[in-house]
Length: 123
Image (cartoon, rainbow, N blue to C red; front, side):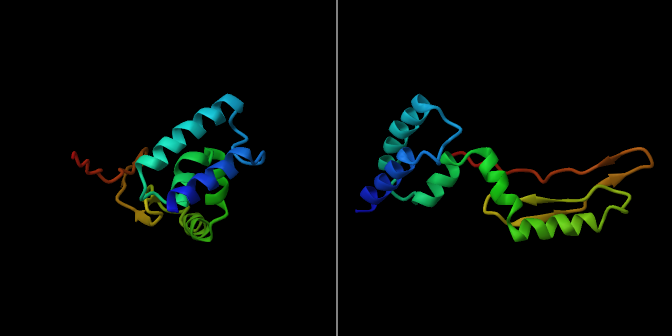
């Protein structure tokens, strides 16, 4: 039932002319074929996670992010810090949480802000 539900949602996405408008017919067809295989091979992936990860265009993702109140609060916070003499900012983590970064070094002519190291796990 769960697989059938996700395949129905995929079919709805494929036939909805307002969705996936960044793809032409052949691209959408190829995405549909690949998606069926992916959803069958990954039964634990929810439709929302799949759609957000693979079917939403980058432009749509940015629009969603810009309308998010948490994102807007971070922008407002940074706008209040424009007088600082060093770089600061937020990193948005994969899960959506934001982490404030202020570990910049600063001189009279340059600023640097390093991103935290990413741990790579090999399985």
